[in-house]
Amino acid sequence: MRKIFAERLTELAKENDDVVLLSGDIGNKMFDDFKEVAPNRFFNCGIAEANMIGVSAGLALNGFRPFVYTIAPFATVRCLEQIRVDLCYHNLPVVIVGTGSGLSYAELGPTHQMLEDISLLRSFPNMTIVCPCDPRETDLAISQSFKRNSPMYIRLGKKGEPVLHNHDFEIGKSNTIRDGDDVCIITTGSMLKNVLGIADTLGEKGIKAHVEHFHTVKPIDKNSLNKIFNKFKIIVTIEEHSLIGGLGSIVTETYVDGDFEKVKILRFGTDDKYLSKTGSKEYMIKEYGLDYNDIVKQVVSVCK
Amino acid sequence: MKAINFDDLAKSIRKDVITVSHLHKVPHLGSCLSIVDILTVLYFKYLNISSDNLNSEDRDRFILSKGHAVPALYQVLKAKSILTSDELKDYGSDGSYFAEHPPASGIAGIEAATGSLGHGLPIGLGMSLSLRIKDIDAKTVVLLGDGECNEGSVWEAAMMASSNKSKNLIAIVDFNKWQATDRSKNVLYLDPLAHKWESFGWEVYECNGNDAKSLIQEFDKIFSSDTEKPKVLIAHTIKGKGISFMEDDNNWHYRTPNDEEYKNAMLEMEEN
Image (cartoon, each protein chain N blue to C red):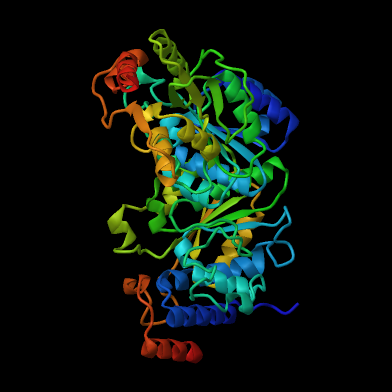
C-alpha cells in the first residue's frame, strides 16, 4: 500500500503543480522519485506532527493540496487538535495518509498500534475517512482524494498486501465483494482479506455469506446499509479497530436511526484494552479478541 | 501624503476596543490593549494588506496567533477599511460572525482561525513556504503571546522555519510578562526569551512594543533584512496598556469594565 501511494502521488505531482508532500521523518527513500519530480514541494517536517498539520493548513489556505504522511498514531492522535482546528474547522483539502494502521505494526507495541483512529476522527465535521483494503484501492483513493475539497484521512496497512478485487471504486460507496443470502459480513480496510477467509470457512459449513466492503467509513454509504438491513436477518461487522466508535458502531447507529425489521448484529473488533504482551499480527489479533475460529463459531451458532 | 500620527490612531483604536468590551462584555481586554501599538504600526506602515488586495496572491499575510486578542484586530481592520462599521454592528450579539476568537468563516482580513494557542506559527510557516514555492516575495507575520510560547508546537515551527530558511516569516512575541493566571516566567520558565529564539536559528530583534518609534526602528530593519533566517521581534509590552488602572493588572485578562470604569477609562483617554 505504501509503495503505490508514493508512486501515485509522484504521478499526481508531475501533472499538478499544487501537490505538496509533507512527511514526518519517515519513508525517505520511498519518496526519492517525488523529490526528483518536485524538489521544492517535498518537506520533511521532522518528528513534529502538530507543526506538520499546521504547516499543511497554511499551504492549503494558500491554494496548495498537501498530502501528509507518517505512521498512523502520529498522523492522527498525536496531532488530533491540529486536525480538528486547522483542517476540519477550516475545511481544507489536506489528505492525511496514516501508514501501519490497526495492528500492522503489532510487534512495535501499543504506541505504534492504531485501533482508535476511526472513532476519534469520525466525530470531526468535514472529515472523510477511507480505509483501502489493497494496493489497488489505495491507488484509487489517492487519485480521488485529489479531486475533493475537504480533509480526508486514508488509513493504510503496511506493505505486500494482495489485490483483493477489481470492482469500481468510488469514495462514499461500498462494494459487494461476495454474494450470499444467509448472513451479511460488513468490514473495512485490510481486514477484508481475513473476512474472505471467514466467508470461505462459513461456506464449507453450508452458510452462504454476503461480504460488503465499506472502504469509506465516513460518510457511510447509507443506501447500501439500508438495503442490507432490509435483506438480512443476521449482520456481522468485523474490523481491525476498537469496538468503541468504529465501523460496528457506525452500522448499529445507522440501524437504530432507521426503521427496520429486527436484525441480529454481531460486532467483532478489538477489546477495550492495551496489551503488555507482544507478538506477530496474527498472534496479537487473537489476543485483542479477534480470533477467526471464534468468529466462525459464533456466526454458525447464530445462524442455526 | 499626510504623516500618520500613530499615537492618535492607537488611542482611537483603544477607545473602540474598550467600548466593545464594555458594551458586549468581551473579555481579554488587557491582552488587546497590549498589542494595539504593534497592530497599528504593522497595518499602517509595513503590511501590504488593504481592502483592494485581499484576494491577491502577493499580499502580505498576518496571523493573530494569540487569537483571544482579536477584538483589537477587528478595530484595526475597521480603521484600515477592510471591515466596515456596518459589518461590525452586530458584534457581540447572537448570530454574529465576529467571535471572540478569529473564526474560519471568511471574515475579510482574517487569514486563519486561531484561538487554540500554538497554531498560528505552523500555519504561518506553511503560508510562507507556499509563497516561496510560487516565487512570491511577500511577508508572513505571526503575532504570538508570551504565554503562548508555552506550547511545544511554537518551537516545532521555529525549528522547521530555520531549517527551511524561511526568511520571509516574521514572528512577533507580545511580551507583556503575564499569562492567564500568573507572571509568565513563573508558569513555564521563559527567560532568556530572545536567546531562546536565537538558539533556534532566528534573527532576533527587541523593542518597546508600546512605542511607535521603537517599533518602527526595529520593523525598518526586519522588513529590509536580506538574511536567510526567519525573524522574530520580542516586543516588550504592558498588559492593559493605555489605561492607568488596567496597566500590568492581570485581572483584566478576563474582566470587562463596568459603567464607572468605562467612564473613567474614556476620560483618561481624553485627557492624555
